[in-house]
Length: 142
Length: 142
Length: 142
Length: 142
Image (cartoon, rainbow over all chains, first blue to last red; front, side, top):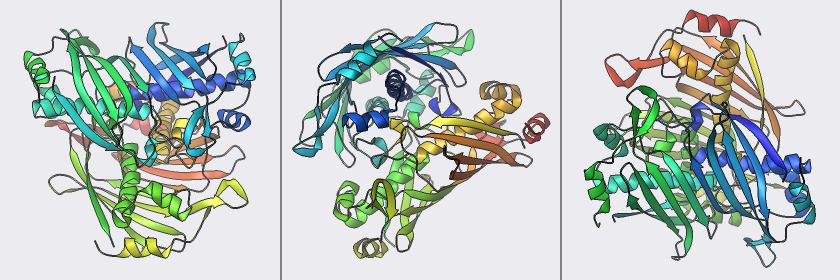
């Protein structure tokens, strides 16, 4: 599978009164990491991807994370992201957060659905088949 | 187990360009719900609790959530929270998000550690035994 | 002018490593306070308001805040909000944050534009005249 | 004055249902930009800076921003940051946000206080004199 790595510097505003990252911030970082994975594999932005494939996004249906080592502001972490499985209209993503010394700090997983506006009700969302181009690009090596 | 319920109105700033809640925001709501659970059971705030028991907090070690129905801004959700298990220095929390029509929108779980500053190194955190008072109050019925 | 007051409990996740509110969080609270002001004056939600008046929102064009007293998690603040001026397609909002002892903690101001999708380019936004109903309701006393 | 420039890619989670940046997110970006300015001028992180100078941070006392052009997710903005004035225990910061085409999208200003724990009450904060080293480094050219 195609893997994307990016570094993130932990900011003051990411941290809580205990001085460590407020964990919901990690989920925001992971959400962005999934976008950057697609962008790196496809060569165009999520904005362009939504337009091309006429979807509204890939909302989360199931996510989880295990936190092994806390990070504090000023720390630089690497987030390593790949799709771990594709199904007809949903897919799984795996994230690993590594500290500068290479230790594994967090492991996270996501199941997302490839979603379009419901044709009968624009307020609703429905899963649609993931395009072959997407599956092929994300499944290929780097 | 003691159960706390609170209602949350979804705000414009909680939502993403698809018009639904940006899921990391739910984790921030759940984190607050865990605090409100303690406050409701103990009768004093998290701030006071940290001071009394000389802990720095109860950092997350493992969390997960399943999202069944998206919410959009203006929606009012109820978050129902309880401790589902206590161990020596860690505990599990369960959250259920219900829509106004009573449908289950999200199920989430947390494992947290009852944590103090490490006596030998104030930069580090260590799990300490959860006080009996905490276990008793959170385990009692409402 | 119509005034709306709401109380907000400062949460752990609103605060930074100095233990006080990370100030961008106040702007999120103010944005919500502006929505609650409209809701209180009109009797329906922002979601419904956008639909009725065919606008995409009221984006910020100019804002500022003066912070007199910091708040920490567990504190309960009152946010008092009113429209301070209406113009053809823009309006000013004033927020005051009061501590439990009545002291003024923050003063903030906003200038926002009443905005619709541009008829010639759905990617652009354009200011449109604020409906008389909105001006009348927000200008009336409580 | 020393100037720091950094690029920020607007993420999905930075944007609201109108598809543009939820403005409180800009303040979080500006807060980080102020940290990066210090880091670039001093050569060490905010974490290290707080430790060296025994301060708890530089809390905001007055801020404001004018928004000229909205940004949407996928956009890449440049944030240009400098200290615009130093006083004994407070200082002003100016941020300019530039779009990829060079147009000015936002102008923001901050007044912050160089703050330590109050010697008589660790719950309180007090302004202290800004060290000469800080003034010298931030006032020098790049």
